[in-house]
Image (cartoon, rainbow, N blue to C red):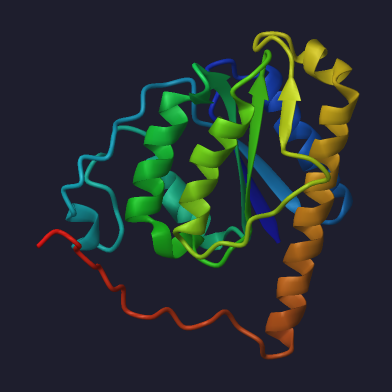
Length: 210
């Protein structure tokens, strides 16, 4: 089994990376393979809602960033953790643009697979950022993995050593990894017992404007 972890920070080895790494340690200790993918360093195009991905097998029309590469990886992955620093009480714009296109074009590659959101802040804006990331999961029928507190760490974004001083935050990341590993193994056991995820109904789109 494998979990993909996404670093939405422009600081490749900053506080967000350190938080994700702590979860990765727990996952690997429980026999789960991990891969941390850097998302926040380079520009990511926004989704323009063109619908081309619906016509060409879930491949985004934009090919000059990593979204299509990640969709391919997601098809083989079993779980996901999305990490972001907090900017103006919201996640990284690059991470949100990445997630909008990933979930729009590659929703079937992620559906019914466990996911979690992790944020890193100097001080505040964490819960609003967690909410923005998590909404991608809950519209796509994905189990949301929790920890023993909201999944956040604190420290200056360019100082992973400060994140390490947040002992509670590091514990939260470890517990998240343990919980993700447990849920993945439960899902695997269910599949082996013949229990698969529900069949998806055709989407009903209601327009209340008359």
